[in-house]
Image (cartoon, rainbow, N blue to C red; front, side):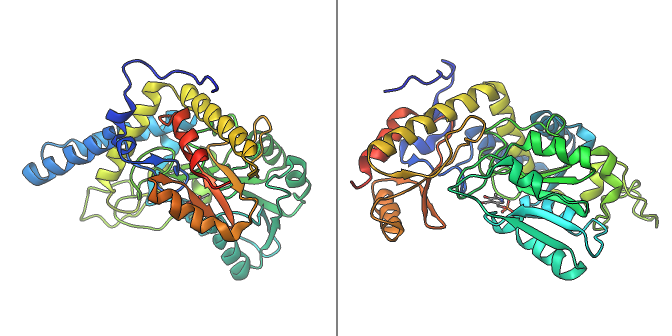
Length: 382
Ligand SMILES: Cc1ncc(COP(=O)(O)O)c(C=O)c1O
């Protein structure tokens, strides 16, 4: 068996992730279990909300602390972070907030999750924007193929940092650098990336980023991080509500001058328990060390790829340096028609993976171990 970087001695997977007591959970690319830290944040909130209403919780101060942690997590400034309902809402801030012109072009992929496809189809239909969708080749893209699709009319490149069905990780840093140089906007869906592979919006020249917390951040659904580069804050027109204006707490006033920072996208009350839970999980990952999290997932997925190939499964996910992620997509030699029965049989054995667009998809996180991978591969039919 391979060696994998050790977790700190005072970290006990079964204590922080009790899910391991009942399941071999290898489906973090879908909806992950929440950490015990996130659970505690929610129960503390619920207790305070029930007993003291908003009087003792200091929730709004804590939300600003989560904003700071989220900014640190992705290399942004606090003033560039807004909380959104989900990844889709953050993408919608961009799609519905920009002043699209007929003839503008958007470059994206044809294998994106629908939240990275439909908004651009909609923009294309409504404003006469050309939507250029690039095809993958055997689960991969070449960066050059993406750069070559950029023309003088390209207004934006819109990509998922990690593609959901193949696990392919785009070279976001190189694409971002090229986009910035060409004056093209760069919008990234990072829900399959943050918490599992390094993401740094400043170093990667990302302009807009959106990611909910319910996958690799081990937080509940419905509390997402939206990043907008400072210089572009006024380029997006947000929805207007009571809370995103400068004098939000002066309720008799009739002046809707927007806040100068990314809070201009938060039009009304927050999902307080969701954001507090998101903050608790981010702190957990930061406390453990994100590089250690990344290295452990890389070791687990590397081992999984090797064991699958030994068992004659066809692995689609790229093993090239910089192209790996937490997702391993693979196919049975008996064809995709066997996949859903495989997923159900595994679930009967309390092993959780997913089927996505005709592929099997396993997605371990850092607290999984090599025995979990063995249990999966041993349970797969020959
Ligand atoms: C690439 C990608 N984007 C977005 C989502 C989910 O979006 P939302 O947070 O809006 O539910 C998923 C979920 O599977 C995904 O894989």
